[in-house]
Image (cartoon, rainbow, N blue to C red; front, side, top):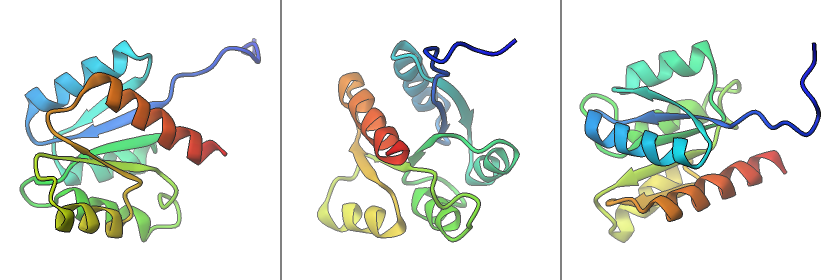
Length: 133
């Protein structure tokens, strides 16, 4: 049985943060907005998850032990199979040098902590719309 054409499957978003509380808050915000979410607690876990089932979008914490948001993004962008996954990086540091580093790594957007639900939803939807266009 096929799905009716007007039924939209929610975008799948992979949230990557080494702080479980941060991931859970983002997950609640995104699910409230109708998105499907999955959580990874490290860069290695995120890359394994992407290899198993690529998400429609990734939210990455900038600073994590081992592999941070920019390193994960660079790896994704250097791989033909994952280069088109939009990445939004979230950080408590909002200085110009950090923003430039994030965008140079290949992220499509940058969100400053603490995250506002309406702002998060708008930025995620905009990134998904750009990818689908």
